[in-house]
Amino acid sequence: MKKLITSTFVAIAAIAIYACGGGEHKPIPGTEPKGEPTAASTVAAANPKGIGKFQNVEVPAALDHSMADKGEAVSKTKCLSCHKLSDEKLVGPGWKDVTKRRTPEWIMNFITNTEEMLEKDPEAIKSLEICLVRMPNQNLTDEEARQVYEYMRKVDGVK
Image 1: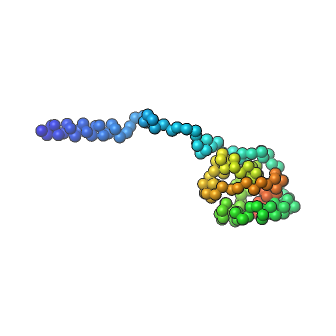
Image 2: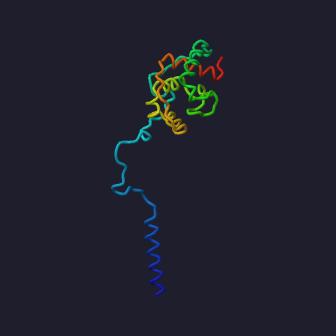
Image 3: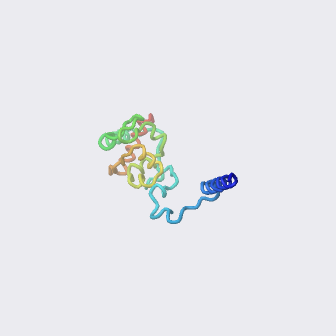
């Protein structure tokens, strides 16, 4: 009787070990992912210039004060109700050191091509996951975007 109990116990243990793992993992038929890939699964590798028409923005070492002043005026009406100039998040992330973290192309593409950036750019998607609120397109012109970028440089201490 002891041999029968021992044999039964060994057989059950062997079945349990076999069923619990090891070897190649194969999906159970009928459980494979279906449908179109999600936005997150189709995210391209990070491009430091972002996605949009700005691929080469010339930025002189010295600040263009006139452009920065115009950018400040644009920012007050279209940006600063959601962004602080510090590193604190308001609705959107704070602007402190943004010009040190991002390229001018990335910032200007984000400002003018907001929807596509939030859908496809990995860094914009990460920002959205933190802020939880999609930035609305502010319909800035290319010139206004450049002015806002120059104001961001001023905030970051460029002289």
